[in-house]
Amino acid sequence: MGKFVIRKTNTGIKFDLKAGNGEVIATSEVYASAEACRKGIASVQKNAPAAAVENQTVEGYAVEKHPKFEVYTDKAGEFRFRLKATNGQIIAVSEGYKAMAGCMNGIESVKKNAVDAKIVEEE
Image 1 (cartoon, rainbow, N blue to C red):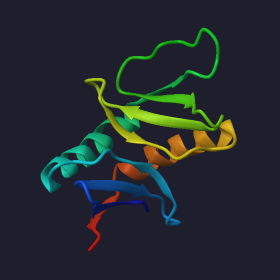
Image 2 (tube, rainbow, N blue to C red):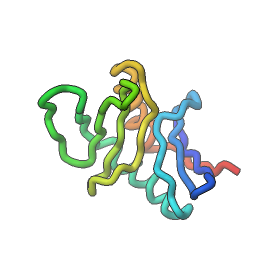
Image 3 (tube, rainbow, N blue to C red):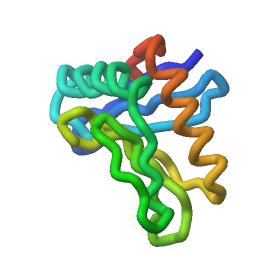
Image 4 (cartoon, rainbow, N blue to C red):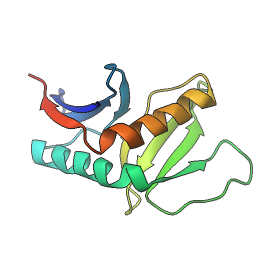
């Protein structure tokens, strides 16, 4: 079972969604407060299961409605995804994947793990 790990950074508070094996599958922006961070987690839990996948790596891709996972390639040529809420705001992002299949597995893992993931605070 996955878990959301809330941790402090030098500039605020952020969360990582970790799969059952401890791998980080999605990360948040840096929030100003713990309350805002928890709202971000709630948004991921609500939006991830229903989110469509928009593959921006193919020419003439179909534009999906929010909420959605946007799949794209970064400057290093790796595949990444960002989860956008119904209001279009980015609520979670992935690491870089060498293969598209890994990126798609990451999306499935977020969809599966986010819903009932427990929330823990790192000291």
